[in-house]
Image (cartoon, rainbow, N blue to C red):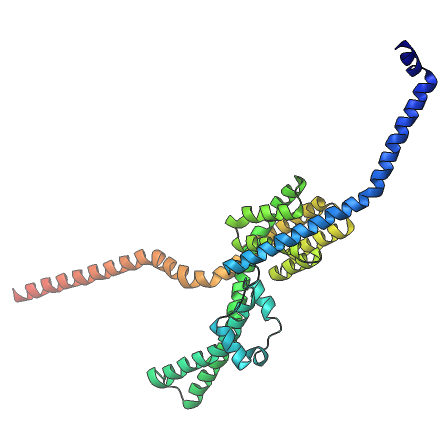
Length: 343
C-alpha cells in the first residue's frame, strides 16, 4: 500500500496522469465537435418533421371546421353570377382587392360581392328613379330633365359601391390612427421588457382591442403574416398598405430597417411613438383651428335668431303693452266724452 502511494505521489507519475486526463478530455471535445454537425442535422430534421406534422394537423382541423380558417372559400350566389357573366373582366378594377382590404373586407367573397353590386346597383337606382318620376311624382319637370335625372341615378348606382367602400375605409383608418400612438407605447414597453416582436404584437393586439377593434385585427393579421410569409418585409409592407397612413408607413419602414441592419428596435419604436403622438396632437390642433370657420354658418342660422328674440323680446313686449294701454285709455276717454255729450 505504501509502495502504491509512493508511486502515485511521485512527481513524474502525477505529471503523466495529468497529461493523460487532459488528452482524454481533448479527444472527447474534438469528437463532439466533429459529430455536432450530424446531431444538428438530426435535430433540424426532427423539427422540420414536427412542423410538417403540426401543419398537416392544422389543415385537417380547418377542413373539419369549414370556418374560421385563414383561407376563405367563395361558393355563394354572387360568385356564380359574377363568373356566369364574366363581370371581373367587364367591370375590371385593378385596385379592388387593395381597397377592400383597407375597408376590412378580405378574401374572395367580398370581391365577388363588390362586382355583383356594382353591376346591379345602376339598374336598381335607375328603375327606382324612373318609377318615382314617371309614376309617383314628376315635380312638374320636362321630359328632358326627367331623362337626365334617371341617367344621373344610373351613373350614381355604378359608383355607389366605390363610395361605400371608401367611406368604410376612411372610418376604419380614423379608428386605427386614433389608437396607434397608444399601441406604439405598449409595443415599446413589451419590446424593452424582453419580448420578441411577434409576442409583443400579439399582446398589444389583445390590449388595444377595447380602444380600436380594427387596429387589433390588423396587428393580429400582421403577427400571422410574420409567421407564414417568406420575408418579414412583406408583412410590414402589407400592414402599411392596408392602413394607408403616413405615420404607420414610417413605423413599418423603421421596423424593416431595424431588422435589416440590426439596429435596436426599442430606439426606433421610441422615436416613432413620439412622432405619432405629435401627429395626433397636430391633427387635434388642426381640427380646433378649423372650428371657428365651421361654426360661423350654424351660429348665424341657429344662434343669432335666438339672441334677437332674447334681446328684443322684452322691448317688443313693452311696446305692445304701451300700445294696448294707450288704446285702452283712448277708448275710455272716448266713452267719457260720449257720456258728457249725452248729458
